[in-house]
Length: 211
Image 1 (spheres, rainbow, N blue to C red):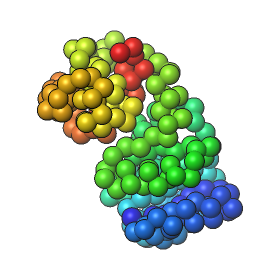
Image 2: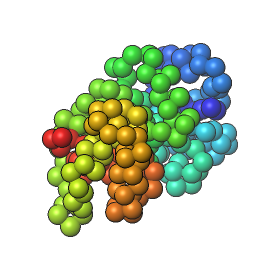
Image 3: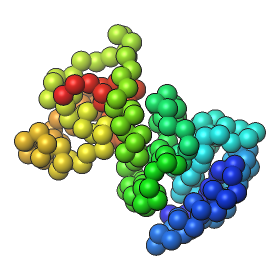
C-alpha cells in the first residue's frame, strides 16, 4: 500500500517509516507532524492509507480522520497512538478508522495490521481489544436491538477479531452456520460487512457481554 504518516515526534515518525518500508509492497509517500498538513498530503498524494497519531497540532487526529473519510473516502485511516482509552478507541472506530494500534505494542503488530487493512479488515492491537472487551458501554434502550443468543455470541467473537473458521471452532458449529448467523445479523441491524458489525458491537457494548 501507499501510505502517509502523521505523528508530532520526528524520531517516532522515522521509526514507523522504517518499519512500514521494511514490509514488501509498502511505500511511505510523505510524512508530517501536523494535522492540517496531513489533509494537504492526503489531497495531494491520494494514498491508500493514512497512519496517524491522535495528538496532532492544528487539527487533532479524530477531526483529521473525519475530514479524510468525508472528503477522501478512498483513503483508509489507521490510528497509531500512545492513547488507548476505550472512549478514544470507540470514537476513532465510529469516525471510520480501519484499525487502532497501541505504541506500546510489538513491532510485528504493524505488519499484521497493514496486512489486515489491505484485505479491508479492521485490526485492533490485542491490548486495545482487551480494553474494549473489558469495558461495557450501555446502549440507549431505543438504540438497542435484542439479537438471539447465538447471534450475540457470534457478534462478540467477530468484535474480538476472530475469523469465521475460528468462530466455528470455538462455538462447535460449521462455518456455513457462522455465515448464516452473520447474514441474519446484518439483515436485522441494517448493516453490511464485518467492519460494520464490529463497530456496532463496540458501540453498543455487546463485545463485552458474557458469552
